[in-house]
Length: 423
Image (cartoon, rainbow, N blue to C red; front, side, top):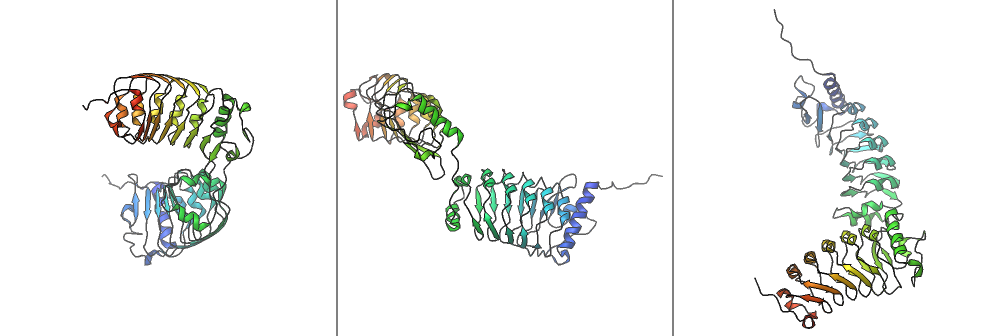
């Protein structure tokens, strides 16, 4: 005689079921708005709000707006395969169990709009897979734990409408992936992490202004200091007319000619007519937030570093009236935000790179008084926003783009080249 028996549930599944039963009882499950199949012999994935994987492990518990009361039991920490936990908009009270820090697979945790109190458990800093964390609209007290700086994958952080106090931990500066955040309705002090300055949430300025907290002054980034120091040395900084604070420990915005934004990032390097000589250091290409590079009226020599093509934020590049030689780097064609380009009055040779045709925001292009030769690339016909153009004093041939007929100020008559025939 053969007896057929159903497969026994795994120990992990039993643990998940035990955790759910403890949760049901702790939150007055008999009175939930919907408690279909809970505490029954039905598979867990038929219990209302529960989702399991193919092994029967609970991966999602979503009981938002379901009339939950009572407190969160520590047994929730046994649901170690849980990826999402949403208990928002209920009447839960008591504290957040530190055992939730065991849920290392959790990617989003939403406990907002309840009556939770006590402090935020530092153990939540163990949830390094977390991308969304909502603890807003509760009665949480105390300080924000420094361990939350470990949540480097976090994209959304809502802690508003609680009773939190103290300073914002500097460790939260590690949360560089944040796109939404709010701290309103607390008693926070100190300053807001500088890394949050770039966040994409359209209302962040309102949150910041209502908070009334400044952005933290960040120390000068080592790579930025290294790039400026390399530039100083390559351009013979000791001989500059004005070199106030260069290579000192003073804030970068006190170094002569260096401009920073409110978060300390270098946005301008303006040293015209300052006695610069030597060469332009390739390290300048690491100043990724640079918007203005004005080095005209000096005695710089050597080539234009192709690394300047990495300065994607650049709007103005002025290198005219130096002794620069070599070819115009094709990499400058990557500077698609560029509006002014002054390379005139140097000793530049070779042809005009067709990649300059990518600079469709260009309003001013001065290449005159160099040693350029060859034809004007037809790709430069894409520069339809040009208002100022100078090409004279070179050995250019061929024709110039017909689109340049409307340039307000140009020296095309001196260049003496015809307009290209329309294709």
